[in-house]
Amino acid sequence: MSKIGKKLLAAGLCLGLAVGTVTGCSADNAGKAVATLDGEKIDYALVNFMVRYNQAGMQSMYGSMFGEDMWSSYGPTVKSNIIENVEQMLILEKHMDEYSVELTDDDKAKITEAAAKFMESNEKDVLKAMTASQETVERMLTLTLIQNKMQAAIIKDVDTEVSDEEAAQKTVKYVMFSTADTTDADGNTTSMTEEEKAAQKEKAQQVLDAVKGGTDMDEAVKAIDENMSATTTSYGTDNGSIDEKVKTAVDSLSDGEFADSVIEADNGYYVAQMQSTFDREATDSQKETIVSQRKSDKFNEVYDAWKEAAEFTQDDKLLDEITFTDTFEIKSTETEAASGETAADTGSEGTEGASETETVSGTEASSETETVSETEAVSETAAESETAAE
Image 1 (cartoon, helix red, strand yellow):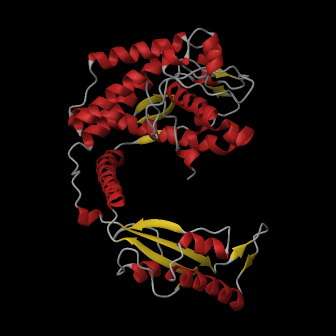
Image 2 (tube, rainbow, N blue to C red):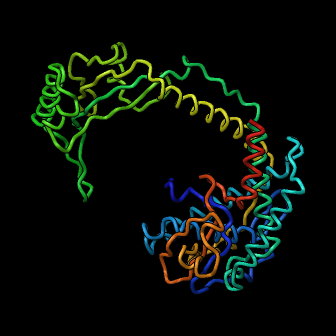
């Protein structure tokens, strides 16, 4: 799945949004059940609001890059991920007692205040198009904070100790002269002749001879082909994308040593050097990856069991009415300053609007996640709870 299609907006709740020509009938569907969880209805207004809020952020971040066709490509995926996220939020809410998770009075007050500011900062046409109400905005923020707190509680007791032995990483530097098939614009595949493959092997041999004679690998590669460069990568027992034949050839080498001969793999000819038999930086990074995977595995283990036991249904026909013909955006710094609210006042970095709609500002993004985010105040509360849990 495309990164942009999967990512939902990770930013503080925008103080205001702008909408282009309103063509849909979203407001007419508010109050209808777009989905149900164990028989309890999920309001169309909530899902539509979350979709529109994310649409605004993504339009500002990616609109100028992907152009007018952006939402025809990514809209359905964003909508699908919003639905999945709402399902997760509601399931986690149902199991709060099992992890003694609750929202404090301060949490609730901040949510109410943030939602009120959002409502005050938007024009009626924007709120209508987003199916936004005080209740709907508060509901999104409430579910988001519960989700954050539940995630922190579920992974609280995950073992974060990882030994050097488990995470140990070696780092190699190599250059590869490809013998793989090529495909042209029309989809036609061409294979190398034996003569062409021999020429690639000869290039690899020239590089190997040069580095054995003391020439730097990068210089040796550039001497053969200015458009090529050496690659540095790390690997361990259970990770790494290095070709197995290369790994076998270098695994017993000491720091700085080169494989004695050109390495012939299925996709080409390699010249490889063992740079470090124990790369501390790469090992520490792998430790973080291992811990992150443990946390992910733990959360998925718990959540998947709950999801399996729950009954979730969705009204596809009603969901189809959430279209992407309207444009939502985040305000530019210039417009914000003109309205008397500077980026410094809100901690925001305005983004230039990519269409003819007005633009409005949002608070500074506090992290990058795949969930709809909350206001800075609510974000800080969630962050504090996660830190305490860890």
